[in-house]
Amino acid sequence: MKIIDLSHTIFPEMPVYPGTKPPVFSIPCTIDQEGFVEREITMYSHTGTHVDAPAHIIEGALTLDQVPVDNFVGRASVLDLTLIRKPIISLGDLKSCEAMVKKSEFLLLHTGWSQLWGKKDYYKGYPVLSPDAARWLGDFQLKGIGVDMISVDEAEATDFPIHKILLGQNMIIIENLTHLEKLLLSDFTFMCLPLKIENSDGSPVNWGEMKRVCELDVCKLAEALSGMVWHGFDKWNISFQMRSKGIKSNERLRCKGGKI
Ligand SMILES: [Zn+2]
Image 1 (cartoon, protein in one colour):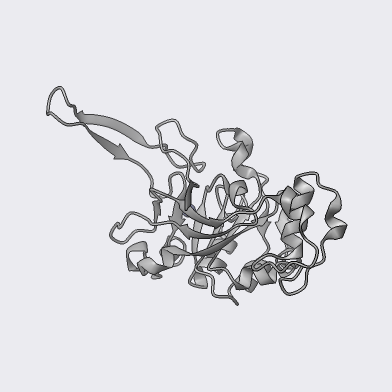
Image 2 (tube, rainbow, N blue to C red; image 1 turned 90 degrees about the vertical axis):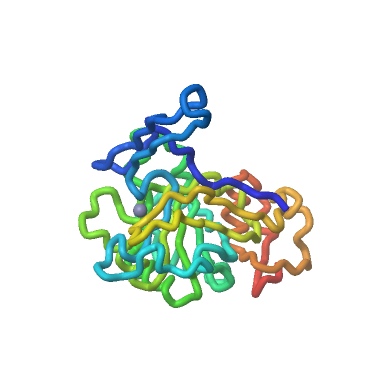
């Protein structure tokens, strides 16, 4: 079993949400003085790769310590949106991968935005779900939605409509994920276990990590498609992945109900 770390490192100069402060580290205990080293860390609860609890946006909703621990682990899929090139992820974009959403407990949106981590362009211009797309996700058994961006709402948002819709449908939100490209076309278990902080609106995930159960090489897939039955993939996702790899043989893909 392979484990992939999907989180950013927490350090004092790291990127943070505009208007919040980066973490402050001090070392009050040292091996020289006390015989052990221990850091004092001061940081916002939504620093780095983190989970949003419903109470983050909705008054009186569940805090992270009230969310069952089971809700932080589950089957997941990565939706490749790297070629979407538009500011809104529409309901139509999601409906074309309904089979993938149906089988998932976590849907992770891979926009490629994590490549901008540490750059000023990271904070704006990323694609966000339309309100009706976010509402549609509530029709499934999803425990959470993860994104490789700083927020599920656009940078200019002040009333956070997509947060409200997703969290209002009893999902958690995971923001600032990275390395999602390593999990395209994979079936895997996603884990985003937060710190158990009383009344917490959110928490960094100390190991936003995945267990990859299987991985397919896209080039090999292109060679071996005809007549084979694959579980858990759909034409839309495979087609997008192949285009992103510059493979021109999409026309060989025919997929219906998991059969290519
Ligand atoms: Zn957050």
